[in-house]
Length: 162
Image (cartoon, rainbow, N blue to C red; front, side, top):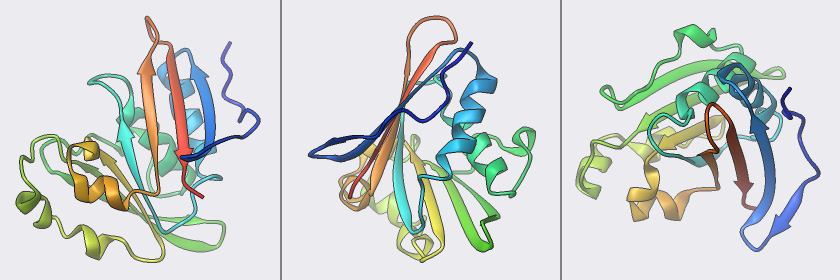
């Protein structure tokens, strides 16, 4: 059994905190679906977690909840750097950008992605390994941290700035 229901909202100096625990990949996708209710464009979120903790799995649920693609169509942008999805939130169009900047080494390389152009009023931008770059950390409106807790169990902590 899993606890994918949103817990009572917590608050810290960093902002609002929501925590979830999942026991398998399907639960992580379900948490992604539920997170769409918390994410309001425009938003730039750091997507943090060690390799293999389920960052892309979580994005699968977010993309599905936006009616932008089915989970099996969502892959990691490790080698392409950026995947773009057109979806809707309610009756509003939403652009979801999923970036992986793990392979980038400098702010100059980051500039070639055109991050400023992605941050439109209807955009959700999720950046894996974005905490490597000061410019992304500075612009981030929150973060999603996925922590492995043994086996397939994951703790997902979402912090959104007020």
